[in-house]
Length: 340
Image 1 (cartoon, rainbow, N blue to C red):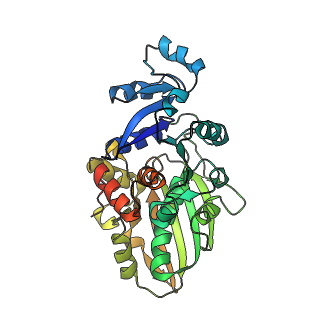
Image 2 (image 1 turned 30 degrees about the horizontal axis):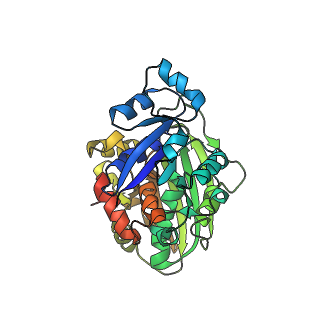
Image 3 (image 1 turned 120 degrees about the vertical axis):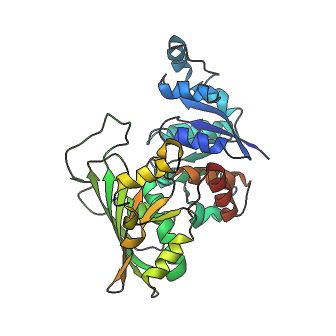
């Protein structure tokens, strides 16, 4: 069975999801949507994707730029089983009405609120709750990274509480509108940041509080985690646990990976498309048990870690694969994600 996937919003996330979907043997891209002409629109055509304009009003702009479009989003939805919505946040309600009109399933990103779909998705934590749903939301890059480690720890040892400080990139590398900045900005100043409640949209029983700081970098986010577990374990136990997870990559400062810059250089040297790091980067030599509590650092690549989750969400909603771990393995193999 091959399902037809539409991508609404061919930008930072959308183009990456499109490439990942194109690598799957049970999915095909039937079209991608751009609002206005751009190099990304031209690249979509070069890759063989059919390009659609968001509305009829946008078509003339593409014609003036001599970029061929196959119609509008409305036209595309007539030929799709599911749409991955990677449009800017806060447009969800508008597009939801359109998807309902066409009777297609849809997946949004973490820029939208949980209430839009009533279901937030993570491949490992709640895949089995997704089959048959019309709508889902893949949580943000930071929340995805937090859920991956917290779900693993809670399943093995139980999480009594988690306290996390997020040092967030100020902008994506290609974003010239919001960066660079020469400052460290508490964001928000008043606790908590939205990331803790977002984790609870998937792991409802986790006691978590988060605070965030916007930093002068575009490369990755960095998390400092302090977790109190219900069962005792050793540092080696945690390293072994994380080493078995399908989307956690253990690195070491002994290999001269001491920063987010070097973590991204590793992804490039591995030959990753766009230098993407789809998995959490956890420094195994940062993993410490101190006074009975667990501490460690992890880095999250904001442009790419949600990409494999979107692929799994497609399988889950359309019930192509009922077993979440089989979908994870299939997705990982197809895109070249191997953590060992």
